Length: 589
Image 1 (cartoon, rainbow, N blue to C red):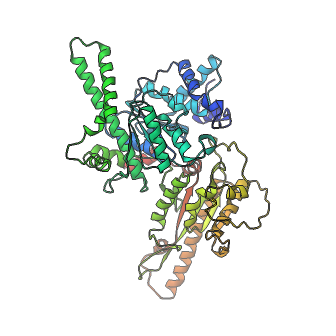
Image 2 (cartoon, one colour):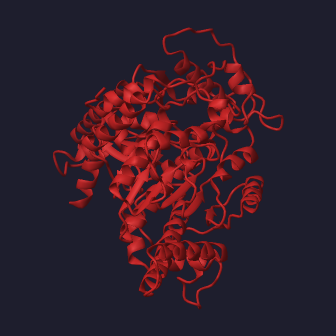
Image 3 (tube, one colour):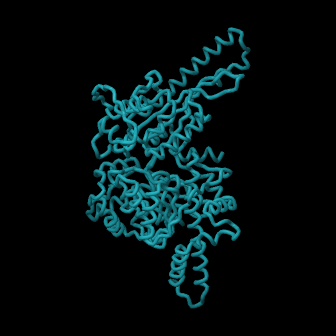
């Protein structure tokens, strides 16, 4: 069989997906054994790959992107494997920051598909297939470093088939995929820590106390030197390619990973040079000496301290700041990192679109903080207007939200940060993406969403649920989200006496494209109204017109946050005809 487009290849692989495995199902527990079998069938030896392995619940994609960008700035030929893709499946495989070309994708996809067909072995599952494909691509291209993002969990993730990464990282942990990874933060931490390897350095950022204890327990058990970066952040004076204050913490982790890799590679090269210079050294001796030196360094920590002058304070925050401020290449890598769909701003259709694929409580909180700083710059501002000077007419903003989130998550808990934003319009819409399959659990009822929520704990608020008609519309999940939102807004004070007149205008629309068109129409209407109002104002001789188009600057801006799912963000970007190539081209101009 020969696929001729990446879209067709993706659809064929997606059609073969099986239900998501449970915590203890054989499908999951046998993952690593199966991956080793697949590697043998494909004749893939992963030993040449030098890997930075990253797990976590939120921020791991952003951290991987910044790690890759720093490594590229330091002169390495980089490979980056991440998931899910936002627009095109080729984004999962990047070389020097760019998605691979269509021809390269198809050549490797067809090679793997046909190889399994030839030997009579069932085609591997969706993520296993692409992980194998990533290994094959990056081996062929001989990248200097592969930044490898875990798909789900860590311990039993297909990426964990690797035996000897150079360094590992754990990003912020949160409750997600609880039906697979466990429903406590300790269980999830244990799964993520499954990527730890003996004598391989690992870094993490601040975690909840119970999660950090579990990471430390697994690290000690595995013989992994684990370093917590405490409150280390990229200094504010350093430009960041990724928006959002939380990215400075992710940037510190990315720097620790990239810099550690860089130091170990330099040490290994020095050891190889010394060994090869000896007249009686065999070719294999240098490799053995190099590997031995790396193990000693990672155990002692010298790979980090040796790169710093003696006068630099030994607290980790000072070390991070020194490395950033003393290395222009590191600064360049941080400033030029890109990661679409995470705190991303796109201005199109006369609307300001604020895209963030947050789908956990912590990531939603960061996304809301970012949106609030832009659309509600005054921390005390809860009105619909942006403060202006006394000499100008207050300029109104229309704030909107387009929301989608799959029902295998605790929606009532996740959306809590969003309730603090005074949205005027909220649109719920379904997705049309081959990568976004329905959850493998039944859609919960409204009562289940409220009563089973982590937010609705015995110590938390008691929800007052109004009489709601039983609806069976075409878009049942979207209508249920609308009902949930109404209840949450009306019960913000716990009384159930919320002022209905202050609720946003909420609706269900059948597609992302129609949701976008709704806000475009709002913008057009407000411009027309503003034009009429200004003409009436000027005709009344209150003020003289300074220019024919002065009215346009006074028409309300429309700020729309798009969040709840990376698949939603991806569909938005497709509708906007956004691409990595165009974005990079604009930045270079």
